[in-house]
Image (tube, rainbow, N blue to C red; front, side, top):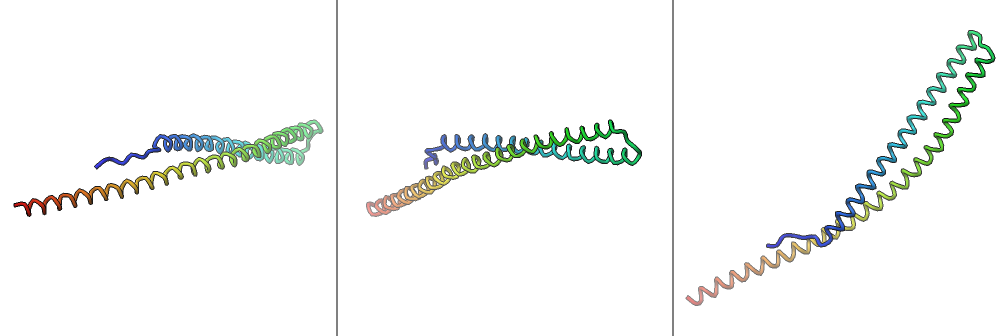
Length: 149
């Protein structure tokens, strides 16, 4: 009985390697997206803190210079938030594109796995036929020996 050998093993292995690489790239892009989201959250918290400080300072009495400083800090955070929002939009687009690449690579792997399954079924059928032929030959030889004796 011969061992099953998938004729396109190297191609399937290559497709699996490509799929793994694309999944790793997707993971990196998703981590970058999460990092940007965390930065946005931190800046939003900083904005709330500054607003709270400003309100506290106003209730205690604040100079115009201090108000200008608070507003400048808030404006700086707003600019950073705007820049991060653009980066986040780009990161989301990159993640979406990479998800499509991973889906396509996964489909490619599936195609070759289905071909392998079909080849394996053909192999099993041919092995069954060969085994049946061997058994039939043994039976015929056994019967012919009995008739000769």
